[in-house]
Length: 412
Image 1 (cartoon, rainbow, N blue to C red):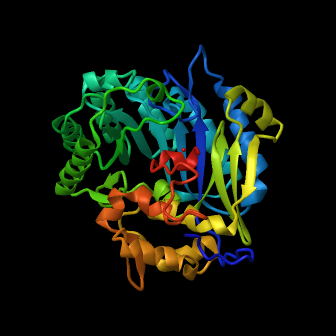
Image 2 (tube, rainbow, N blue to C red):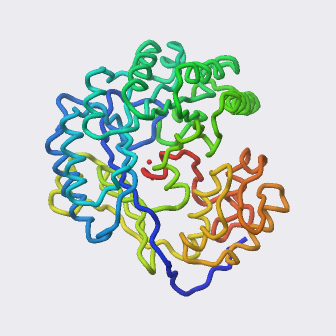
């Protein structure tokens, strides 16, 4: 079922909010399930050289976003907390001197409990980081070992406890449907995060992504029915403690939604700098996607020469409905109808047939103000998204549909 998209170029009445994504690609050890652009640390990290490359990359991109205010910054990886607070401070100072950054901007950094030090966390806060996302994954030593994490449960608890005392808001990243995990164990992890008082929890279903160790040598995972029961139980546990389930895998107490990720999901713009980083930049009559060179050494050489971009292409009008829905239908509450035109430059009638079909199948609900997934649509999100693929008529998609928010900025 192909969207009836006009041949004319799009025209945006106003540009969407702008975020900045910074990718730091090194980690202590590559996890067997990870398909992100991450590289194991070998010896000393080239902090100074990499920050210089990030700044050069940013400067080369300035003409595309000139005069636009940055509302959120996300420093992801890899494990950004491998970089010293001094390096993060230099980076954020460089950003602020080159771009207008909202004084109230949300500035998130990812951290691994295996790199935790209380003094280090305080120094990141002093550098301007005001939201920490901690890769806890599980509070069970056995489950952490099963997924190849370098930290233990005690380290995760200490890191989360100190982060909550230092940062205004903290996210606890959890995974479920882990090798050998029971329903009770999955819920116990979530209850532990609740007990600590983490204001934001991300709960991701472990998936076996291509080009990973787990894909080549798959472990024994809970079956689909058990995993579905885990998802329901996790949602119920968090909901009972006042967490809003606002996106497929995201839960927040009031006032603690991830503003950076919400900008992704509402099809906002993001400039991405760093090895393998991706960007989506809107201009008045076109939307452009970019990706940076992936290998850190190659990226650093190219960035200082102003040539960090590996690929750049304009998103065709026929692809925009799917691109928009891939993001916006992750939101449990859906989106205002007017947002579709604001972000794509296309009328909502361009997807009328697809909306009608999804509504008839019970995957989508809408009225004169909003469009959003039903409970069934949330459970079968890939099926819902397929309805909007260009040229698709409920066939297997030509591209993989991922529902990990990290994949938005790296594809996170």
